[in-house]
Amino acid sequence: MSTDTSNPNRVILRGLPAVLACIELHPKSLREIHASPKCVPSLSSHIIPLEALGVKLHTSSASDMSYIAGTDCDDVCAITMRPEPGHVRVSDFAEWREAHETVVIADHISRPADLAAIARSMAAFGLKRLLLSSGTENLAFNSDTWTLAQGAMEHVRVMRAAALGGLLKLVKEKCCVVALTGKIGRKIDLGTPVRVPGRHIALLISGNELDPDLQPRIEHTYRFPGLVNNLPLSLAEAAPIAIAWIASTPQPREDGFLARKRARHTKSPEIKPPSE
Image (cartoon, rainbow, N blue to C red; front, side, top):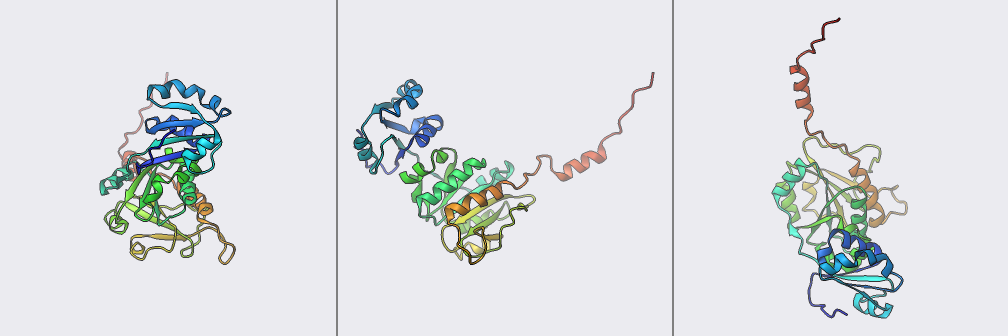
């Protein structure tokens, strides 16, 4: 049983989906796996590869796993050590624009369930870049976030975005920032995707009132989906809808409209073969 609780990058996964995703995508982060007798068969095919990495699979009781996890756990848990998320740079936004990658920014989100819902939605729609503002980055090492995400956190690349207002000012020409908030903004038209020719999209999801310093950096602000004055959706319910909507935005073709137009004008006429 592990007693190393001093490492700030120590994240404990609970539940089979989270543990299996870690084994598949980031096995080098694993340190120990503890499973109940009923869950061991589900992990048996991974035993030899894990032992080659120095990771042992222990058959443990529910009380032992609950002690390790610090909360109720009766199926499987894993101790992992995660690297510090890197700081995002302006050059990263240029690379993401070239690759037509949509970025999700989690700003002032404090509930693990909310960040987990964002990660699950990103994984479902193929988005990979998740930036955490200074008010959210502590959730990067919250075990509840990783457990509730059910493996989705393994699919996204987490980075830190310190001084978010200044960063968005520097990337304004490369990126169109669309914000989703709880109370202010226009209604989302789910049938009409956002169109931003020449730039890529960053979806900023705010856990509270939109920071006044960020408002000048945001081009479009939308409120959580639903009718005004009706029972509002929670952030965890609204985020999947917004991410699905953003993910439906058509991606520009690599050759570009002007390049295709020039190609049509310079293309020589086809020479028909002589008839027999």
